[in-house]
Amino acid sequence: MPTMSARLDDWLKATLEEYWRARGERPSTGLRRVAQEWWAMMEFPSIGFHDGVSGRRARIPGGPDVWEVAMVWRDYAPDREAFHEHFAPYVDREALDQALAYADRFGDEIEDVIRQNERLERLVSGRG
Image 1 (cartoon, rainbow, N blue to C red):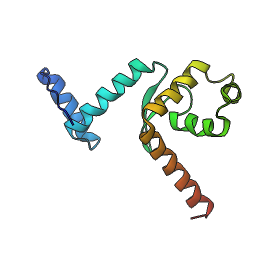
Image 2 (cartoon, one colour):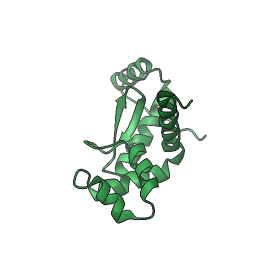
Image 3 (cartoon, rainbow, N blue to C red):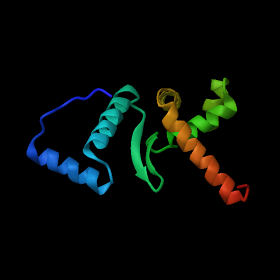
Image 4 (cartoon, one colour):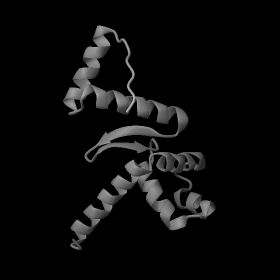
């Protein structure tokens, strides 16, 4: 993987390292995540990120996580109108479209979360 370097003010370097250490991230991993999230928020302005009990997630602020949108899309594809109606009037169409675009760009990440959710669902339901 290619590398980049940057000069940071001492206070910012120390703050970032403390933040990443508290979350169990190394500086390289943390900086890569921050850069990826920044890019994603510029590319998909309806998407934000939040920490939860199951880790950090891309989400529509005030709405569902991107993985949840992608999972619902599976039930409606290719009927975009019915998909939008499923979330109406609570989630903006543009935000839903951006969530799907994010899920497409970061497919491995989203599929991992969906698989984890499906596994937990099977465990809770006693199906293994």
